[in-house]
Amino acid sequence: VTIRPIRPEDEPLMIQFHERLSDRSVYMRYFQPLKLSQRTAHERLTRICFIDYDREMALVAEHPEPGTNRKEILAATRMSKLHGTNVAELTLIVKDEFQHLGLGTELMKRLIEIGRAEKLGKLVANILIENREMQFVCRKLGFQLQDVHDKYVRAELAL
Image (cartoon, rainbow, N blue to C red; front, side, top):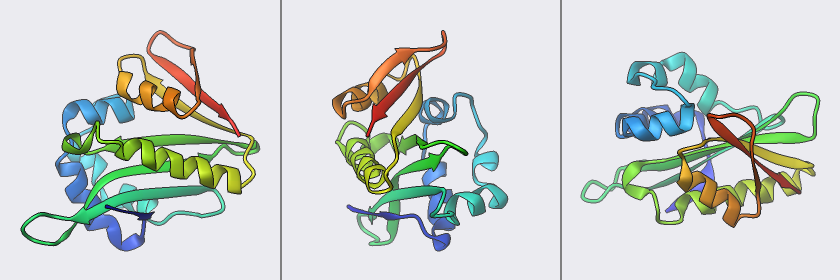
């Protein structure tokens, strides 16, 4: 597996990535069901794949598909600085068959390193109450979790 920043030419790979996500994974990441056509719209993917490095960082984990050797994205994570603050918000989504293998944890570790290098004060993530897996990853990485709503918890990590 190679972990690297997302690139503009990743748009077709991101379409394939979204085609293989379960409804549960989509809901856990976006807090609502989103149609494939919404997630793979060119306008949306352009914003995702062309990042402004002063405001955000997005990493993908990729590897060659078995049998074809074509590149395949397994997971994507993003750190977006919140305007006017020294805080950034993290998001993560991992393809279903690659969950529970440590990939999400590794991607989050990389974003934490980047946040520290950028001299950010805090990283935050909003996580659905039922997303126990993401809560576990955040706790393991030192985030403090707080119930802030009956639907989600807020994970915070002081850097």
